[in-house]
Image 1 (cartoon, rainbow, N blue to C red):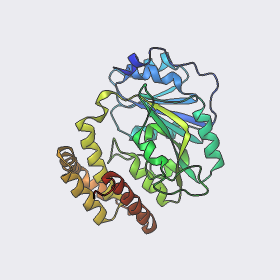
Image 2: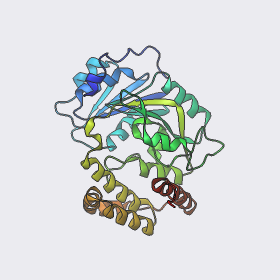
Image 3: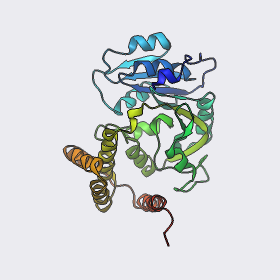
Length: 305
């Protein structure tokens, strides 16, 4: 069932806008989903059309006349979001995809939280999936605080986020380089997180900021799993010690057909990844290894007797 079929009613009119935040929507060839989602955002909107054919500018003008639409000549992957963030004039930018939107009141709440926590660079909201509002597995994992919790942050520390459920401090995000062309899409969030944490910024999960995401059935396809494996390997070689990067590469190759395809797909991009290589600080690496040990233990479950 398409997003349009699941949402029979058009998006509600924007009555009261959240101030000092801009919603940056990345889209490509998803006209009907965009028609449904655009009207839900309670803030200024910048749509980045990632090389759609035909261009989506007329659709944006019809559904959301006050929105800015940036038309790109080709698909830049997640880098397209950087252009929207640069164009925004607000202190904060909230990401959304064409199949996602922010729940009523959530953007205003996000601005208040970010204003109150000056070290916070990324606020990861609670992502509810599909018409049944199922809690996303990533949100559920973040809520358990496996990365600890700092007293000056509004929720559990995080070392990753879902872009369609994140609000960022523009200056921090852009200083970290935003999303990069090596990773392209998906899984583009990890490298940004590592660079922000390396620079001393805080990243936190805030449960009462909510995003709705209605992905198409193909979102968990074999192709997507291959790309996720590829990008996890590339990110490790860009920022982690050789032993960790090599271990991640071997693990991907042993994980099955999609993982092996991901490793093969990483090879042509490896020179660009290595050219951008910059290891995270030692203290952050220790924290990451502790987090990954916890995650491995959770995947394995309790010991069998």
